[in-house]
Length: 262
Figure 1 (cartoon, rainbow, N blue to C red):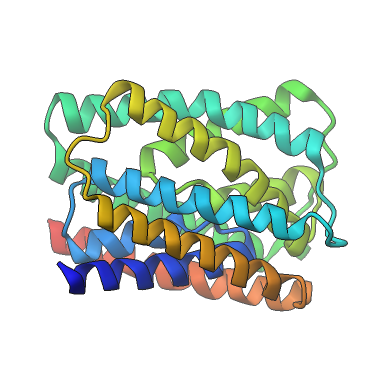
Figure 2: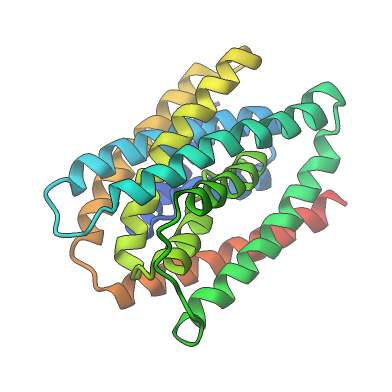
């Protein structure tokens, strides 16, 4: 038990550092790694991931409050509203498949494959974004709809939405990597509150190991503090390198997880 807690703490710490630095959130790293360990079921992994990411986003936003990085509160809040609505849909689909029909293994394989495919597209987009036209969207409806789509995928996959948020923010608002990262964390903060609230109302937190949860939250707090401080000192180019490198590693982990579960 002590070994597992230590591993979970290390994963949450490293994931939160990278998540705070590049706007990845941490869930995109935590979920595949905990899948790889295979200690908990999908529902428990979702709660652990969401709790850690929420802790990381709280600390990061407090740390960023005096930074020069631009936070587009209006657009990011509209995406957050959409992602909360989409999150209810995504979590409803997840609960139907995993909890109501007990398709834990099949859904796990599908999640790993779908996440790998999405991340491949995001990696290609970020690498080639200088050749792709980006926009300055002002329509509230389009922004909210984008948030809904993000929320469905993020909630169903249990990843917090970090890389999806970053890609959409760059595409819709022509943000650079650094500003997209901070705005992504702002969106994640609201989406994870809604995700945990929904889990508590629908399923409760029965069966969750309190020590494991507490140590993962601790990792989220420490990682958020360290990562957000580092992010303020890095250039856009270095943030993008960290983002792309992390995405590549997670793609391979998801492919491995899918193959091992088949």
